[in-house]
Length: 333
Ligand code: SF4
Image (cartoon, rainbow, N blue to C red; front, side, top):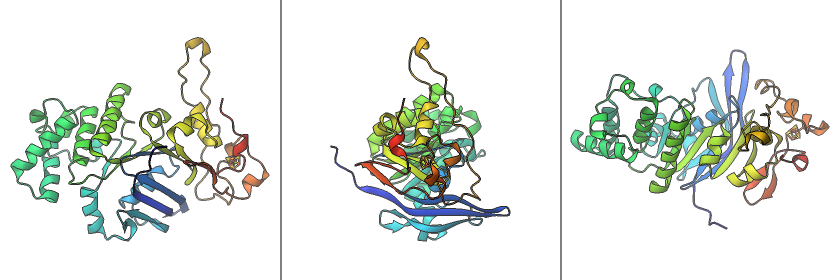
């Protein structure tokens, strides 16, 4: 059994809600998870299940108000990030926690060259001269495999392809003195499949080269298979299953996880191919969820108890837990 690495970030019983004009949206409810040094943890689930709200709570990127932390802690290198003041979390964002987004155009400034924007990170946080900062930027462009880096640092974001922009964003995320945690929010969703594969390879490569931890948010089980060491499956703001990536794919025990896997194309020959199975129904209204399991209205395994109380954790193995009353009935295939 592989030795467990040190915990870098620990989210403990986090609940986060939004007070909207149409009612309180309980976006995240009692989520706990750990990210260890050098591992990739993926948060997976449909849109609106609370993945991004959980990740954005780490570096306080959720709008507050209307958002608010109802309870919980987010411990990072001995500090509860939820207690930090704005200037303190901003400093951490540029130095130890970085973020890449689905569409880099929204994060890159269109009126400055990509090189100038990355060099600015070096000058601000590491007090480098302009020339030193630009040399380091070119080194980073080489690291993220941007061709002709000396020329590309002078490009504006709109002059780069989608894949190149995402590489530039990754370079910016690595421009911190001690990149500990990278949060990647659907980083390949906007890219075509061949470029997606290149970006995922790059992230995997960098993770091993610089022992970075990655929190990867995705709705795509193919990306999970490619990237994850461990997987947290979320549904309607709750954690419903957590396991190492092999257990998730080989012995899923939550009906929602099984549904996500059954909606993946299989790798069989055409004559054995099956129709993809959709999960019927939709995610419930997060303002009116009761005390029971929120998956009840879509679940083929639901029983009377499911509508009455949310299940407690069942530990199935050292790294595998599920929150389901009827997990023992769930069989893949
Ligand atoms: Fe389905 Fe009940 Fe399990 Fe929820 S607790 S996933 S409704 S079987």
